[in-house]
Image (cartoon, rainbow, N blue to C red; front, side, top):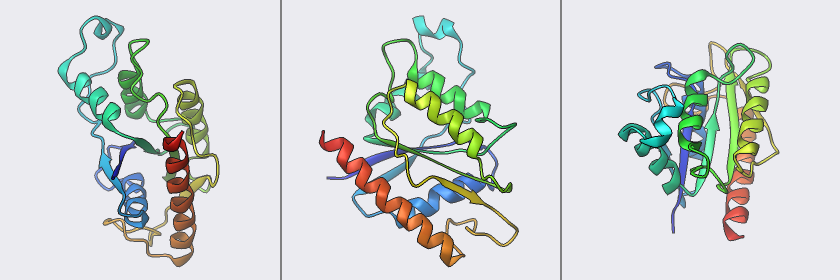
Length: 185
């Protein structure tokens, strides 16, 4: 049986480092995990008025998250926090109260940046939000990938630096173990 993983990338940039990172993780994962990128670039801004009658695109997002067995978040860091587009998608999929599509799904947070801290503060903010939304998160290893002109992951998600491949494989192995453990409960 395949485990469906919803992947939310917090960057809309065409050549997003975080999209590259998510692709690299997917390529390292075993065949029993099926990764599905969740589109978040076409969502309206969350408005509590939606709670009475959710727009179709928002209903579609909620259904996509509900259909997933597990979650993977790849976030850049904008002004020391989570990008607005990612937070908006989380707000839409978790509202109105009592209809949280994320609840109970095992997840992990990873991130990439050109900065030396590799999205550490954004990841911490995201972890706080996801803890409130009842997403059991993999705590270790934390993944903070620093991108430079020569990699470490190319535009196709191929890892070009051996130490990065080894580190990410360790993360993927732990993530897979985590997902299986949580889903067996």
